[in-house]
Length: 460
Ligand code: GAP
Image (cartoon, rainbow, N blue to C red; front, side):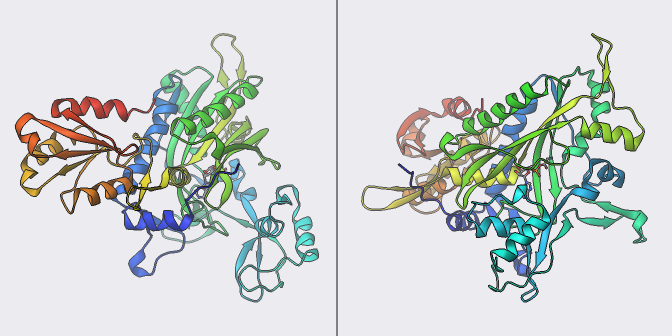
């Protein structure tokens, strides 16, 4: 039986705006299409998502190393990687309303997913659009320009003159910062193949049709991990990373029913095999992350374009070779949207009320607990508890309104524990601890709170 989920994109967007999770970018100036600003709650959640990822893929892997490379790179990097010539989407303009669209998206929407444009050439797409009278989703007319490839890289220029020699790009993926540092990392860590290089950072793409809130934006963060291995071992590591990427999501609390693997039908210019993990977003199944077997394409191209060797010298066999790369790449903002969608719930309460509750994994929740003095004259004791726990993790404080309303506010931002300071606290140094998911309350000594919460918020 198909599961009925109450989450919709509108509910997520509204909750994010009203609870300080995500605001429209540059809002007081009327906004700036498809840019978003993370608010006080959102920045904590996103940082926690990034921390969990880093812990799993860098901290817990003795053979993985982190870098934080520059966003602006030498333009030769993008020539070597193939982005200057091949990082483009098939674009069409509506001659009547002047709106701009991706031909592949038009076909996918028109055929309701029955036709796969990934395996079509531009000519085949053009023919399909004409034959099936695929109309402009904005004005309804069918008056298109021919398809042309549109490069997604944002260009800017360095220095004071705006000539072609000074053109540089905002990086469209973080991966190249890992490849160009392959020798630096290997030399300084004395890592032996296989080993990994990971990075979390901003990427920029001039997407033709961004949208669906933070799903596809022009500025976003990627979490990427390149695993350098010997040719011949690549397929086994490809399978291993498919599993690791899946396990990371289920360990964060994602239901396996909302996840599925999807092999790529059309491979990128560098890939031997590639697949996505798709998530059942409120708007339907869509890519959440990718796992790509990039072969030794990137390192070979950087060797060719930079003139610097990318050979690895195997100390055991004395063999020299350019390693293959298994890439695992996931957008932090896209994972944020998936996390919000997965956590969202509306629960009927006794008495006819409904509560909105975000069932985040406690490691991801913005605040690990909320300190709620039952009455304002208990604030000295409550502040004392806040001040000791906030040295250990993010804690919030709320003394406004009835205790019931305060619980609801914390449920809506997914705070796993509410700690109420009452008059008994003054007598015996104990507090009530309410569990977000079960709404059950237990009484605990203040001295045990830190250990209790620390145990619950671990991400293993
Ligand atoms: N280095 C490989 C690479 O960049 P990709 O499939 O283009 O591969 C990897 O991107 C991940 O980055 C995607 O699975 C998605 O999570 C995220 N991503 C890509 N484009 C995005 C966009 N415009 N907005 C938000 N996230 C995006």
